[in-house]
Image (cartoon, rainbow, N blue to C red; front, side):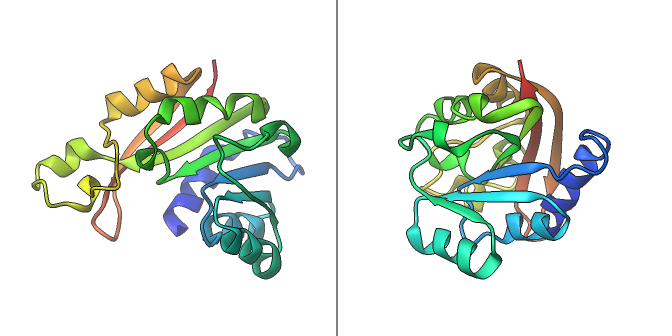
Length: 180
């Protein structure tokens, strides 16, 4: 999460007016480590997770807003708008990642962007099919081109795609994209 936070802070530097606290929605927040670190950096964060225990942890331990629910089924109009909506290692787990990502469009404030991380299957393939990027619970793996196409099909314009190998040895793609 340290690298993820650093990448988001670096990309957003100068993106928002000085003195503002960017508002972030982290879809599939889990235990909330990522939004917790961004809260420490001065961001206003909301965690969204289908597990009530994770949402309660975010509220009671981390001290951030948290919503329990399935992002594809909840009434997102009650959430408000956000400067950044993030999907960290989420979209590979759903059958229709385009539909899920498209649901984020109305949640973005003017000038906002999405940040997503997905497994880089193209890079992992060179090391064989036994890699974590190809786990059975992953419905999809991506290449830089397919990750960018995912954003485009969901109504976004890719701004930056980064390919990296995490300290855990996972191959990952990061995509920053704005509403088209």
